[in-house]
Length: 89
Image (tube, rainbow, N blue to C red; front, side, top):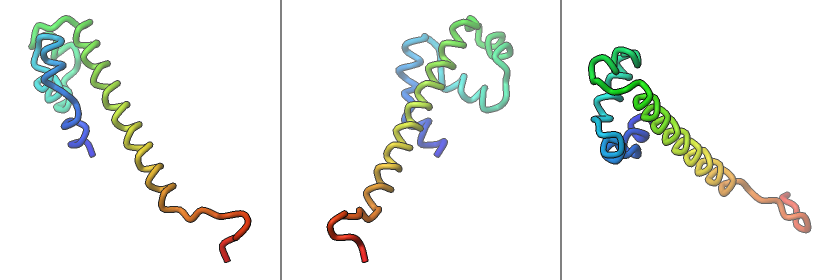
């Protein structure tokens, strides 16, 4: 599931928006680097790094919400609907 999230996240658009390599930042976060370490290595302002992180988290939250809605819709479609005048026997 995590692989699906990174595929749906448009890293190129974020990189263009912020003028930095977002995929490199994501790899650093996955390795466990702190924000201070990343800003020191890359030269990005902490405020810009915070905005990038917020954009990524918001995108992931939207993707997860869409997946939950889709799963709920599929589950409801598979359920039998009871008709009040002709109950299921």
